[in-house]
Length: 78
Image (cartoon, rainbow, N blue to C red):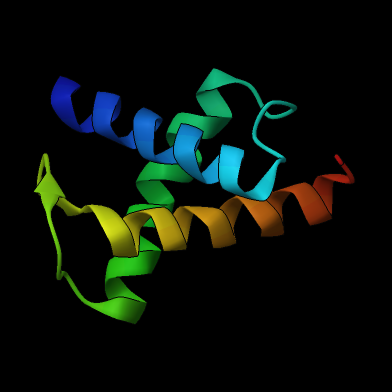
């Protein structure tokens, strides 16, 4: 469980850096975006590529980037 939270945080951090919107969200939101994004990304793109803590990295980062973009759009953060 702890390893999944750490991996979700790293995925959310990378997605935030890619979209340039993650620094305004905070650590908890990045972890949330990473965990939810991993689920979204693997649902849309499958579970291919390297994985960490049961999450495929490339689809998870892509899904987290989508989640970060959507959340920042609705919260109005730039």
